[in-house]
Image 1 (tube, rainbow, N blue to C red):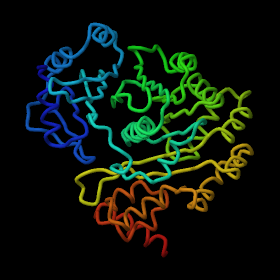
Image 2 (image 1 turned 30 degrees about the vertical axis):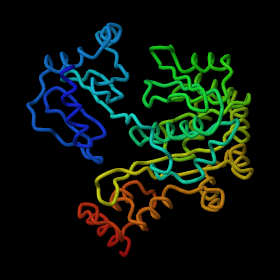
Image 3 (image 1 turned 180 degrees about the horizontal axis):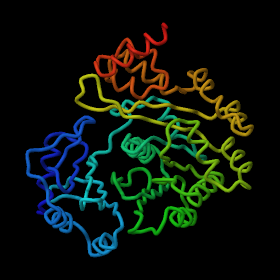
Image 4 (image 1 turned 135 degrees about the vertical axis):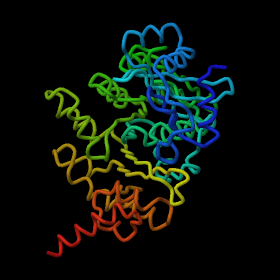
Length: 368
């Protein structure tokens, strides 16, 4: 057993989501959003580098020795699975281990709105799942992919960096390919996937213009494409795609989005009301003719008003979803206040004195 497994086993026993290892401090656990140290000595550079070297392949050791970060999957002797990011910083080596459950959570367990399930019934087009790093995008996508795998007889090709949830083929055939192991880039993976008779293509991250362009092509030519962006909100996600491509393709991209973008799901991860877990809260935009016209005429700033009036289609603004979750006592109101764009409706729910003081000052200032 690799020595690093002891820290990972302890983290799992405590119910943490991430284990952080860095030179000069003890191992840290991410518990319900908070980063807490375990009772252990500060890690030295030599010690930590020896720990991580034990779990690297020769190719990974070579890549890391060249000064590059590494993303990979790691499975302990006990069968626990982790997504790992290994990096160097000013004081030495650092590593983050994200726990990946062996069981893929279904949509009901995640508490996802029913419209998310409905979106998986599309036969072509693009669905984006967006949000900052660590907001549960991969879990939401895995749940959607598992639903398709369980209910439809399709060929699903998943391009990931690295492979996180493992999807055994059920009613569908699932082909999972990993960047650096099976692919040199997401764009190359997409190009190959189009020759592999796909019905559904999952793109782990649409991080550059070439990948975005290939994903748009795949969606436009009769495939269902699921992808992620590190953006917050439907408007910023749409603007990000338009701005990522060359200016001479701007009109073409807007036209594509207005006709082939099925939905944008943007999420944040809030502590539950008892602060023992975390729950994804979603902003959801479903494409309509009105939204398509706003995109094609450079009026994406008006999309939020469409989300407000599109409740019957399953649409919701993030602030709206946060407030309803607070009122149902599902999430910590202090987290909701932090994530809300318009904080006024959340003020009466806040219990954190550090947040309450600035609010009181603002109220006094407003009164003056």
